[in-house]
Image (cartoon, rainbow, N blue to C red; front, top):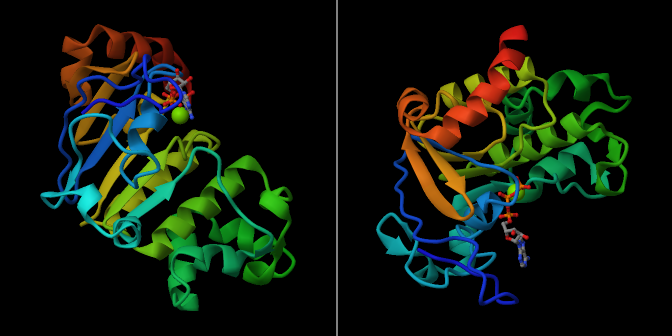
Length: 240
Ligand SMILES: Nc1ncnc2c1ncn2[C@@H]1O[C@H](COP(=O)(O)OP(=O)(O)OP(=O)(O)O)[C@@H](O)[C@H]1O
Ligand SMILES: [Mg+2]
């Protein structure tokens, strides 16, 4: 698959991309800023269409699904959490208006959001200001993740959705997520090696190309770019 933005047809941002992700698997994407991670994952819910090649879900080209059916299958948690003016409950129900209060609480719990929600004056009925501006970055991210869980999708796409969390919250959240949501496919874009090192498969992108694909251990041996990213972070992580 290859992709260029309609506005820059002479400048493909993704070249010869090919990979598979199975149900129950976590596939991670890492690479320097601007290498094409967001461009890649946003093709899955068809924010844009591939320029050549194809993307299949359950063996079917995504362009053959009704767009609403396709997007129903996907929980996309964008790089910048998009919350709207309304209560926490309303925000969480965005992807699934019929979700019960129990489901909302379970999702908040998995997303490590229960504590700060319960500390707010009105709990789940607390009003969020426009864009969630009365929350911290990490709180916004956790609500966006909880909202994704409430939707109960087949495929989760986390575009750098853990970046504002401290490492221990990030770890707790991902551990709970994988424990409770076994069948979904999870695609995780991240900057931190710690967020992705236990993924079933890690895809290393550089300037729109895949330069490495494998587990953390394999890439540490075989992929210079991955090794360099890890080396630049290792000491930091060891300190945590
Ligand atoms: N809407 C757009 N139109 C044209 N070019 C774009 C658009 N969005 C991104 N690009 C370009 O595509 C390339 C890849 O950007 P992308 O956002 O996919 O990178 P990224 O790996 O997600 O980076 P980051 O880690 O900073 O989020 C960049 O050169 C960027 O300038
Ligand atoms: Mg991005």
